[in-house]
Length: 173
Image (cartoon, rainbow, N blue to C red; front, side, top):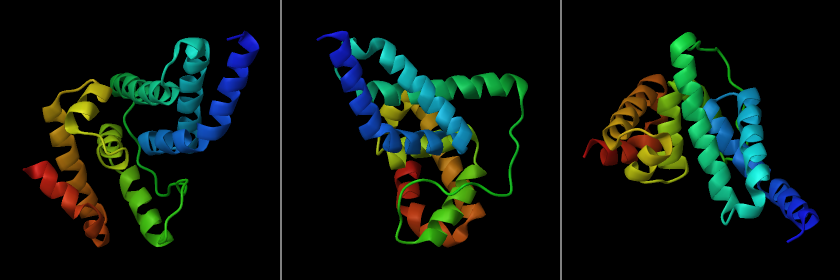
């Protein structure tokens, strides 16, 4: 494959998958600007290795997850999390915008690690083992973070209990 062909394939990939990948980045970060930065880093890394990637989307998603973990670790050392009063509306569609807004606001009040665990477990529908591997933590950490996050969501937005009651039963078993 020529360099020009590789650039064309990468450009097609970016055009086709950016919206979905940005949504995952937003769910991981809870912030539009951070999501854009995170996605940019992941796409830059994919561009450098493009001709060697068998599964480019899987690679980009993996970079999103690992870069998010790196950001948590660096933030834990220097900056405390600040809660905000409002969050931007997440991308994507829902038949109930009010539910989406309440959920986005509640998710924003979780820790970054809790948000990431919920995104991987329930949005990406990954197993506990897969989530642990992607976040470079133990399965026990995934279970406890999911349990704490779901409990916190129930406290923050009791009107959304129907959205995560099934997940909580799975986590507590």
